[in-house]
Amino acid sequence: MPVANCPMPVAPRDNSKRQDELIILNVSGCRFQTWRTTLDRYPDTLLGSTEKDFFYNEESKEYFFDRDPDAFRSILNFYRTGKLHYPLLRERHTVFSVCSSFQNKF
Image (cartoon, rainbow, N blue to C red; front, side, top):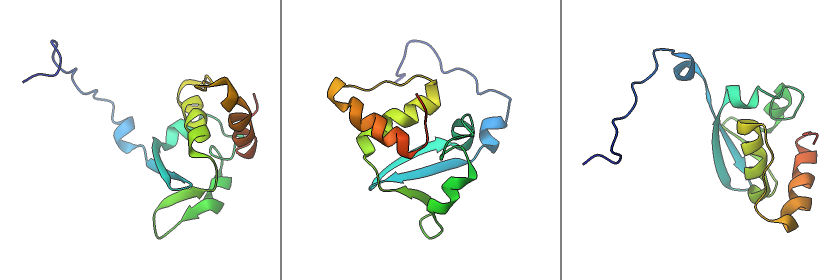
Protein backbone atom coordinates (compact mmCIF):
# COMPACT_ATOMS: atom_id res chain seq x y z
CA MET A 1 0.00 0.00 0.00
CA PRO A 2 1.60 3.30 -1.06
CA VAL A 3 2.14 5.97 1.56
CA ALA A 4 1.50 8.80 -0.88
CA ASN A 5 -0.56 9.21 -4.03
CA CYS A 6 2.55 9.86 -6.11
CA PRO A 7 5.48 7.50 -6.61
CA MET A 8 8.80 7.98 -4.88
CA PRO A 9 11.26 10.08 -6.85
CA VAL A 10 14.07 8.31 -8.61
CA ALA A 11 17.29 8.29 -6.59
CA PRO A 12 19.77 10.85 -7.90
CA ARG A 13 22.67 9.54 -9.91
CA ASP A 14 24.98 11.89 -8.02
CA ASN A 15 26.84 9.75 -5.52
CA SER A 16 28.00 12.66 -3.34
CA LYS A 17 25.59 11.79 -0.50
CA ARG A 18 26.52 8.14 -0.69
CA GLN A 19 30.16 9.10 -0.24
CA ASP A 20 29.42 11.59 2.57
CA GLU A 21 30.18 10.46 6.10
CA LEU A 22 27.38 10.11 8.64
CA ILE A 23 28.37 11.79 11.92
CA ILE A 24 26.92 10.84 15.31
CA LEU A 25 26.76 13.60 17.90
CA ASN A 26 25.94 12.49 21.44
CA VAL A 27 24.69 15.49 23.39
CA SER A 28 24.26 14.46 27.04
CA GLY A 29 22.97 11.04 26.02
CA CYS A 30 20.73 12.20 23.16
CA ARG A 31 22.14 11.00 19.85
CA PHE A 32 21.90 13.17 16.73
CA GLN A 33 22.96 12.08 13.26
CA THR A 34 23.94 14.36 10.42
CA TRP A 35 26.18 14.42 7.37
CA ARG A 36 29.74 15.72 7.63
CA THR A 37 29.01 18.15 4.76
CA THR A 38 26.23 19.69 6.88
CA LEU A 39 28.72 20.55 9.63
CA ASP A 40 31.38 21.63 7.12
CA ARG A 41 29.16 24.52 6.00
CA TYR A 42 30.40 26.54 9.00
CA PRO A 43 34.16 25.85 9.23
CA ASP A 44 34.79 28.58 11.82
CA THR A 45 32.69 26.79 14.45
CA LEU A 46 33.47 23.92 16.79
CA LEU A 47 31.34 21.43 14.85
CA GLY A 48 32.58 22.59 11.46
CA SER A 49 36.27 22.44 12.33
CA THR A 50 38.72 19.77 13.39
CA GLU A 51 38.40 21.03 16.98
CA LYS A 52 35.46 18.65 17.37
CA ASP A 53 37.92 15.75 17.16
CA PHE A 54 38.88 16.50 20.77
CA PHE A 55 35.38 15.28 21.71
CA TYR A 56 35.49 12.09 19.61
CA ASN A 57 35.08 8.78 21.44
CA GLU A 58 36.87 6.06 19.48
CA GLU A 59 35.00 3.22 21.23
CA SER A 60 31.49 4.51 20.57
CA LYS A 61 32.42 6.15 17.22
CA GLU A 62 30.63 9.36 18.19
CA TYR A 63 31.33 12.87 19.41
CA PHE A 64 30.21 13.59 22.98
CA PHE A 65 29.18 17.04 24.22
CA ASP A 66 27.91 17.72 27.73
CA ARG A 67 25.29 20.28 26.73
CA ASP A 68 21.50 20.72 26.66
CA PRO A 69 20.17 18.40 23.92
CA ASP A 70 16.94 20.38 23.48
CA ALA A 71 18.89 23.55 22.75
CA PHE A 72 21.33 21.63 20.56
CA ARG A 73 18.46 20.52 18.32
CA SER A 74 18.03 24.19 17.33
CA ILE A 75 21.75 24.52 16.64
CA LEU A 76 21.85 21.44 14.41
CA ASN A 77 18.83 22.73 12.51
CA PHE A 78 20.76 25.98 11.98
CA TYR A 79 23.56 23.99 10.35
CA ARG A 80 20.97 22.33 8.12
CA THR A 81 18.90 25.38 7.14
CA GLY A 82 21.00 28.46 7.88
CA LYS A 83 18.18 29.80 10.07
CA LEU A 84 17.94 29.71 13.85
CA HIS A 85 14.57 28.63 15.19
CA TYR A 86 13.66 27.90 18.79
CA PRO A 87 10.24 26.74 19.91
CA LEU A 88 9.70 28.89 23.00
CA LEU A 89 10.86 32.42 23.76
CA ARG A 90 11.99 31.38 27.25
CA GLU A 91 14.42 28.93 25.64
CA ARG A 92 16.19 31.77 23.85
CA HIS A 93 18.79 32.22 26.61
CA THR A 94 19.53 28.48 26.72
CA VAL A 95 19.90 28.26 22.94
CA PHE A 96 22.24 31.27 22.82
CA SER A 97 24.26 29.87 25.72
CA VAL A 98 24.74 26.56 23.92
CA CYS A 99 25.46 28.40 20.65
CA SER A 100 28.23 30.25 22.44
CA SER A 101 29.85 27.00 23.53
CA PHE A 102 29.84 25.77 19.91
CA GLN A 103 31.30 29.12 18.74
CA ASN A 104 28.27 30.02 16.64
CA LYS A 105 27.86 33.76 16.24
CA PHE A 106 24.37 35.17 15.72
